[in-house]
Length: 144
Image (cartoon, rainbow, N blue to C red):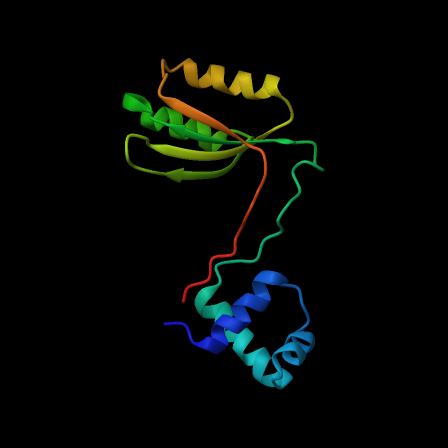
């Protein structure tokens, strides 16, 4: 169970994990020492790690795709392909007629086609690729 105070700390950290504790304490109307201890407690119990959210378009990778694959008898081989691909940002095992979900970034359509050719090399036809055109909401879920 997460307390209301923990939620307030988590909301603050999700908005800016590099925020100074003194600023957080001011916004929350709490003493700095109290907020500092709460942050340390929440970090130990509820936070896996802090990461930088990259702007892939500015890094030269404007094409973002989500890929669903039914790997059939080639699950291990396709898993290795996805794991080892430079383009794979996120890789998940899923169910309901598919085995893997991958979020991938590419510089251009030629790279997308080349990657799809690698999947076709396994004889797989049951995969769906979706081009992400806009992120509408990202990393905002907060348990009640």
